[in-house]
Image 1 (spheres, helix red, strand yellow):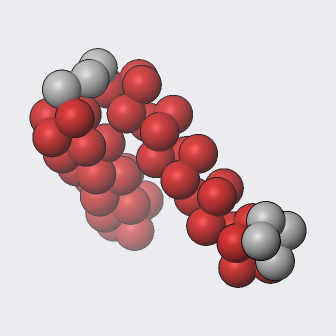
Image 2: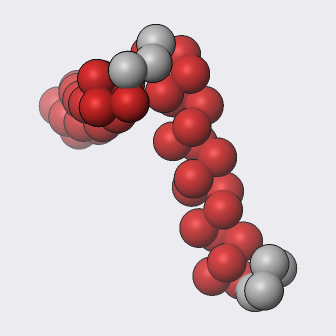
Length: 49
């Protein structure tokens, strides 16, 4: 349970910080972070040049 709590708190803080810095709502911030993670994975695998 401790690991899960740590992970959830970390994820929440990332989304909250992103939403505050960009001036957007939390839901949109979560989508933006997810898209950035997908982009990073694609670049690492060489899918996008």
